[in-house]
Image 1 (tube, helix red, strand yellow):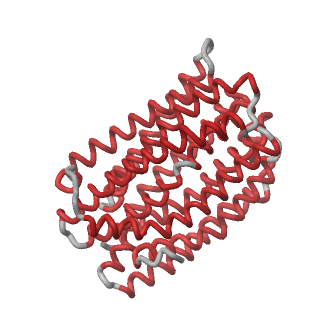
Image 2: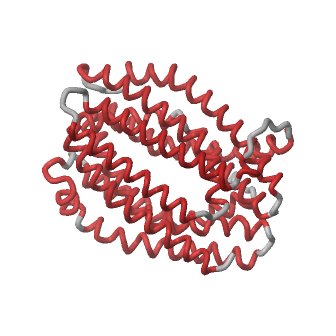
Length: 376
């Protein structure tokens, strides 16, 4: 794969990202205004509980992408299909585990530990169930997304991102017209509709474009299944640490400061996501080549890709972060008007600093996955 192809893929991803970022900033502003700080905070903490119990998915996402990329380098369709089918079965199992945890421990934590205004507890429980369905859809979508990225179909990946954002904008427009129904519940149901529509597009495209590789049938390759599960074992530890540091922080924030502070955490997370998406899209374009160059034993090219991706990722996020760090109060006021949650400014600055550090690690982490030394 030439550098020209990587550049083209990066361009597609940046077009997607710029549109998505602009839409996300607008959506956050409108949702915060329509729901209010309290309901916005409730939505963020409820989603956080669901994500906390979906930590298995983060582990299997990287595992699935890694194994499909490696088998793709072999140009053997049957081997790619085998990994895809094993991944589907693994993700169905993850869905079952998430449902069990969410409907037991999660419900107990939501109703007995989190600080949610008494008058909003029923709405919070409904949103929780809807958020769980959305999380399950995201879990089963992973193998299809991995197939698209492995084949480097970044143009479709970009257009699909634009379609998803357009659907979310439509959902916000509908939310603004609703007057006689709970807006928090309505917002969660609208996002569920968007999630179903996006998954349908993923499914249809992969089945049509990569039919031989995505044809489903039960696999009995216990060795490959064991290899994938062993690989994901160490990653589970890392994923637990990541989820604990993000959603765990969200939970602790709620226990000590309530849903208003959760709204501030939600805003800080969205600002950080917007800034880091520049780096993430840059790295996504390189990730297949990082894995495939190592699998092909082209170590010199692999080394150049690692160092180049790491260096330019840091430069990129540093340039973007500087104005956000220095003018965070002004930018938040311009963005959210009079609805800036308390603590939002300091939380935005803290998350941006964390992203500056983590931006340099992406290419090293992806190569570690390719090598299989994920215990680091």
